Image 1 (tube, rainbow, N blue to C red):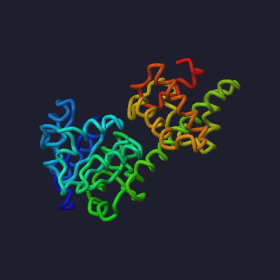
Image 2 (cartoon, helix red, strand yellow):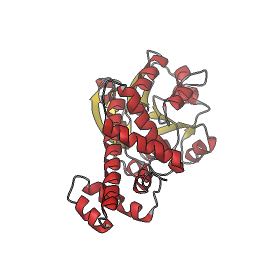
Image 3 (cartoon, rainbow, N blue to C red):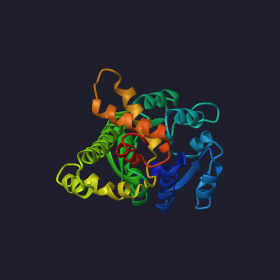
Image 4 (spheres, helix red, strand yellow):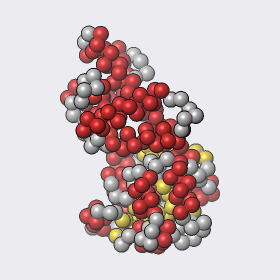
Length: 291
């Protein structure tokens, strides 16, 4: 275990943050936790974690502090103010931003933290099954020497990949998610086309098995046929991520395929599917967009 990562705080104990904290506890790290809902922190306290009073307290106790929150607004909430991370951050602290918040939020976080505190961005690709198995993909951006010191910590969580300077992790995560959302939209529209053309469902899946969509078609078939989409990655968060992509590229880059995927996710959330898994967008596409 890396000495500099002996005391690790996790701020944000949703589905991912809580499991990251528990995984680190299981690997012998001294873990400090904080969450707006105290009950989630108390559950980990029972497993050996130290419950911080607020994010500033977590920062004062830790050598490394991981943020795992829902969006840029939540990151600002846990960072700014007298009880925020920045108020408690000393020169020995390294903050690791693991949320999907986009490069602008990472830049803001750098400006909000004391100059003496180190910052890496390392958003993760994968969901609850991957974090429990230790197979998350981490896209690590920031100072190379700092990243190297924390490599054992990252490997305790999953498979780290260094992608460049600060903010590169956030950019890499948006690229990865763009691919996921685009593929899901293409799968849904291909199956909707099969319906419109009168191609039997079994035949449609056999055809798709011969295409680059084959693996996704096989993975999603049971959910499509049952109409059940158990949540691994909330559709509302996927929609948020497409908004972050649109904000990051602005008007200078034309991405019509991703724009279509974003439109489907917005429509699915408006249809009441925000708390379903993001793959529930398939149900909307296959219903002709009628919800």
